Length: 315
Image (cartoon, rainbow, N blue to C red; front, side, top):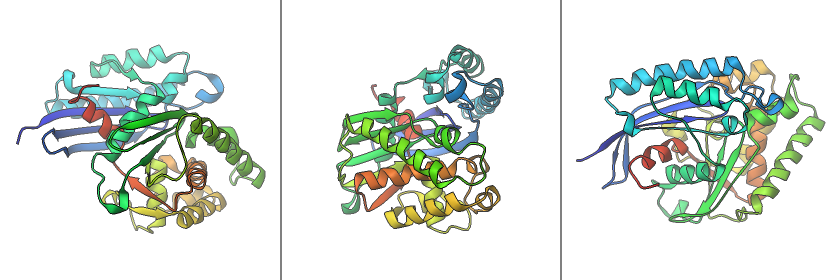
């Protein structure tokens, strides 16, 4: 079997993730060699200051140094490495500091892609393996990040895509910051913010009645893990799980009513998501209610896998 070894890095607002994998173009299969995540919170304060915080840059560069060692250990050349940077570095005045630091460490320049390109990569990563009567097209894929959420609709290819500025970090900073438990007024303000963003997305992407709603990224997988009542996070159990609307609503209500300590004690909760998961769940619930979907298909394969495939396919 002839395969190509690649390294894909997704640097978002809340996390930076690495995938080193062997890709088989003939069969369309991905063989993971190393898949990992670091919570770097690159978007710390960007919504208010317009700049990347020095601490956020330091955390990100530390993760990049670790990733460079991993990539080298698998023998991946620089021509097979791609780092895609998303919302926080699109918004920041000092994005050049981020670009220079990453290039020095990894030997490749980060690509600050548009929201539409993010959506395309997410669609490829999320749908390449989907099949069966229960997950038929058209697909509406959404990638719920820290600073933005990408929506893309299509069947075998992308029909329409749009990125809007709602995400778990951005919504937390705007509406839930400084409070242990959000008040009903704060929750309603956050929901109104999400609905306004969905109105913008709907100008480009049909959000109504998709045959299959596919949710990506840490908020969605964490809510799925809670809904499934897993004793510990299990990516195999979460991947392609189908979570009903009623379960998402119950988990969202639970998270909004939980203290920081109670959220931290949930078995599937990553420590870096404790303070932003409630806002993220609000976004997820609003998306499901807006689309009329009775369930969401959760995918562990997302923009990271799309970035990997982009290294062996024409972009």
